[in-house]
Length: 481
Ligand SMILES: [Zn+2]
Image (cartoon, rainbow, N blue to C red; front, top):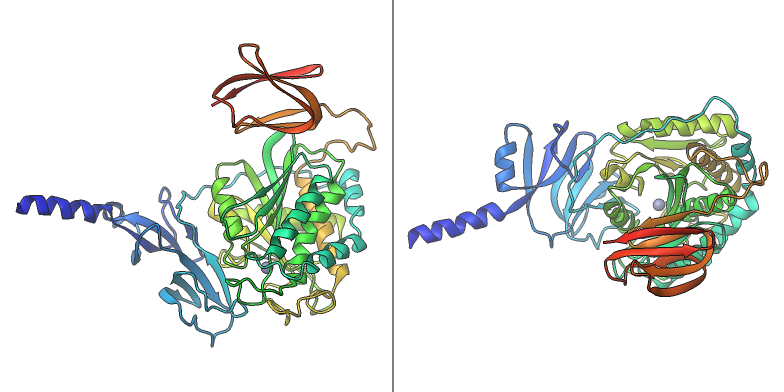
């Protein structure tokens, strides 16, 4: 009898796991959830901790269960404490909180919801780029950025009244942005819903000659301080109508060009609730060949002339930040940049890419966030957003970097050759580079259906097996499994 009880408790003990903080540097081969400058966080079982105890310096901060939610919070002002939240860990103004911090005023705290997935840190891939000469195609793309167009995006977004992620206003803004992308030459645009109460992320894709991709991102959602409630006003012109307008303007000016690398344009939601939308997307795409992300968050407020653009990277992403600086010097020499490598600057969507081991940088008007209208009803055009010139120059720099890194193929204007029609098959979906007419056959030769002027075919509802897609002068075979 005694023996049985002993075995039983033994099993319970081994099944337990713990949230731990580990002192940096974490030795290679040990997976973590996220890393800051001095420490990292991870989840380990009792057994794993026993094996690791001589390799890492760690501290258990909670018994972990998949139902637990943890937030990383950073105080902006020394006198503010995270009222009403359960503090598991605190160091240098940085906290780990347990449970959603509903009482936290995000004017005083930056927040990030911790992922429940730990990953091995790997060194991100870098690409070579021709930085030493001015490419006329990039110059042409950059010259298409227009102040009026940018301002129009910011005003349109502000006019949704609220873009708090829990509101219809944010969903409406996402649908509007999706529509805009669909009408500007992308190969695929979709809404990424990750949690039922949040408005979806918007993802636009322009396929290149390879799946390896560069991404430009910004968060579409806004808050006036308490994002966990469906705030009925949240104009977010600077934060982050400005960055969202950069993504949309990039879509507009890059239309009609083809690139060697695939380019993705993403507007995230749930950023103000702790990078929830980007965290969800990145977790689902952690094995994608993502070469780099340029994330823009607050690029429309100037407190000092001439304003310089602050750029932030972690150590592995420094090459991407250096590229941004060189493209800026070459194509937008009037814009000055200020760079900093700081893995503790985790409070925007770029850090969700850091967590999955991808290169990512943030562009922001000022890392100290001096905008007095930050997370308030005053974040409107004319107040929180006060410089269309600065905002547009930052967009020019971002577009130069994005299109340069993606390596433009000869512009359509210069060489009016017909771009080869392409068929891409991915995870049960077929994408065509232009609208196609055709038929889908089973391997047995039986016709399943006909399609007309179609860009995307969803084969997922069909049984596993081989299918033939027949287009005019072209066909392909796909294996559905
Ligand atoms: Zn923001």
